[in-house]
Each structure stands twice: as C-alpha cells, then as structure tokens.
Length: 262
Image 1 (cartoon, helix red, strand yellow):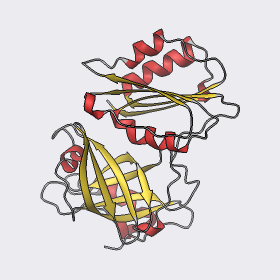
Image 2: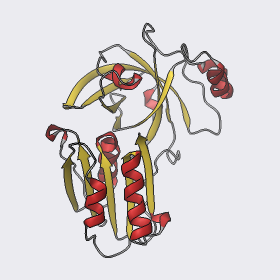
Image 3: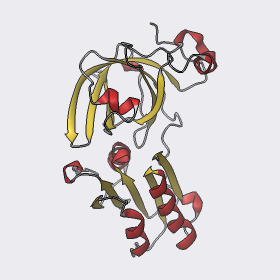
C-alpha cells in the first residue's frame, strides 16, 4: 500500500508503520518504537505534538484505510463499514528521530477495554499500523503555546498525558520555570522528567478519585503571569480549568486544556 498520499496544503500525510520494539516503561505503560520506509519525511514540532493512529480489528494484520482516495480519504473512510475500517485514535509523539528513522509512542494500558490498549499490550516486532502524521514544522498539531509575557508554567496531567508532559518539559527554555503535577495509578509509573527549565514536579498516586483537583484548589500557586496546560481524564481537566479560570481569575486564553479520556 502506498502511503505517500498528501495534499499540497496539508502539513500531514500518511505513514505506514511497523513495530521495531515494544517495552514496558511502568506497570501501566508500554512504549512502542515504530519504523517506516517514509519516516525520513516525518517532522515533529515537539511539545504535545499529536498524530492519528489507525488500528486493525481482530483478525486483520493491518488497518484498512483508503489511503489511495487522496483528499477524499476521510469521507471514504467514514462511509466504510465500522467493523472493517481502521480504528482511528489520537496519540502524542513521545519522540521522533532520524538515522534511524523512528518514532516512539507511549500507550497507557487498560486491559482489553479499548482497541488501542488491546493492540499495545500485545504489540510485537513486525506488527503494522498506519498514521496520519506531521511532515512539516508549524503543522498546528502542538497545542502547548505559552502566551506572551508568561512568567511561569503550570502543568496538570495524568498518565495518559505523560508523553506530552515529557515533550513539553524537553522544549521549555531555561528561563521559564514550571510547576508540574501528575497523577498515576501506580508508584512504578513515576519517571524522570528532564528539562532545561527549573521544574517542581509533584506526583500523586491515585486510589480512586484523582487528587489533583482538590490539591490545586488548596494550593498557593506562584505569583506572576502563568500559562497553564492541563491534559488527562476529562473530569479532572474540567475541574482544574474551572479553578484556574473561575476561582483564580486566570485569563482563559492562558489555559490550554485537553480531555484525553472519560
């Protein structure tokens, strides 16, 4: 299958992917490294750069996607039988590199409760996926955009947003300090988060309800102009954003938020 289909104006295109390796990076997370013949054209903006992954159904050796439909691929895909067409999900690029041309995607595992988790927990070298990924800088697929004049950054996330948090912290300049609060289901899901910036990282191990909203509500946050990025379970994201914008009066334009799951 050809995956070179793209439009002259779109900074995204199809890439055929195969698993190079898969490794556990915590009790609830697996990191899959993908290779692909065309990945030399893959260009990431870093931070929370997103892409679309297509997963096969059980019994398929690769996802069925109408790549050859060109600009009409989405309409054609939408009209296909949902039991046959590739299952599309949004993920974050944890890392992208060349020589060798590879990308890393971290998957939060939830057993057999969803097609992505089911696929990832069984991923093996040679398995195939398809992605619509970035092929140009400034592609619009990274939402972390600190406002002009921001003096510090606040990040709140759960384990599903950890790859985005890692990308954000690698991108932060040394003169933009960050408060980073992350909730995870297991103690073993904690990891090092390198950054050139001065960062204060707080880890919360969940036992039921996510503790971040209550912790944010009770916290005394730094002075100065903030920029906030919130990613993870939708209820947590809404609660933290509400506290920052409604209760603390932070400009809503200074708060970026994404519900990764419900």
